[in-house]
Amino acid sequence: MAPKGRRLFQPGQDCPGFLLLARGSIRVTLTGQTGRTVVLYRVAPGDVCLQTFSCLVNDTPYGAEGIAETDLEGELVPPGAFRARMAQDAVFRDRIMASVALRFAEYQQLVEDVALTGFDARLAKALLRLRDDAGLVTATHNDLATETASGRAYVSRRLAEFARRGLVRQDAHGVQVLNLRGLEEISSDMR
Image (cartoon, rainbow, N blue to C red; front, side, top):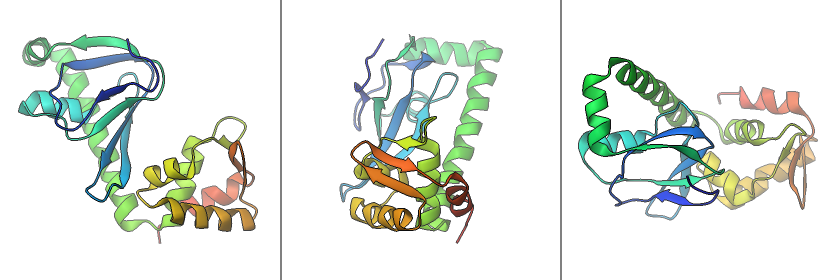
């Protein structure tokens, strides 16, 4: 349906319909007037994209950007058909509303992380979330800044400190997690 890297929507664009994602992942980001970008959430199969849901319910354009992180497969339900299913299909409606409630809880966690959690904890959480099975994080410093709602230079300084403490090693391939337990401890620090 869409290849990895394709921009699916952007601010100001009208919504073509509701995507029932069967395979893949979509990264939804918001870019401020300063140019700083933050990851709002990711959409996986069974998840609801709040941007799309809001656009369809309120008949408004998108306010954020969605990029296919992987190749995508799914069904695009046109706006009229989506509204009809929400009105007439209780199982569909309940599934959508449960997913919206879950996504709202994720938003609440994002606000808590950005507003009330120290940067090192946010960075540690991002490293833990993005690492592969071998402990490698292939995200760039810019990507990590987007994940943590911060600046690239600050990410670079804190990663250097994490490396000095033996938690990670930086190389040409990315960031290798060396001390999983240490990052888990930092990620739970709410200061």
